[in-house]
Image (cartoon, rainbow, N blue to C red; front, side, top):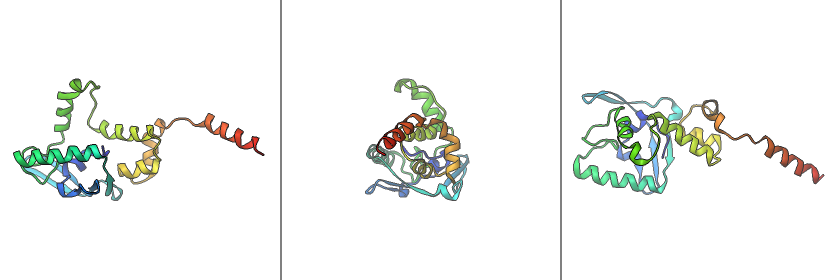
Length: 168
């Protein structure tokens, strides 16, 4: 799980993954018009250039996919099944064809990015960590988009103040 934008995922190359240290380097995006006309571009913002530490399950899945891809249709692109990067509509088709079998609701592709942010918030991760992981330019973008998902801690804060004042 990474929270990458679709263009960042399309541009992802095997050389961008450090399988030893579980690192993913995001430093480019993809302009994809069709199978004959696509090219690598800069990321959306300078903050979009980032390194993400990947969980072990994702690394295991990537290793497996690299083996499968290497045997069938080798590509420098991670998200490729025929040597060229996938088009931006392919993840939608994958979701449409598999969400029922997975027992989940159908979501849009960009919702995968939002779900990643929501998961991090539910894990009580710091907003600055989420900002960096998503590649937002500033914290206002992160809080403006996801701030409503943070729990209201007013009662918890009042109790902490009560506990503190009792000690005085």
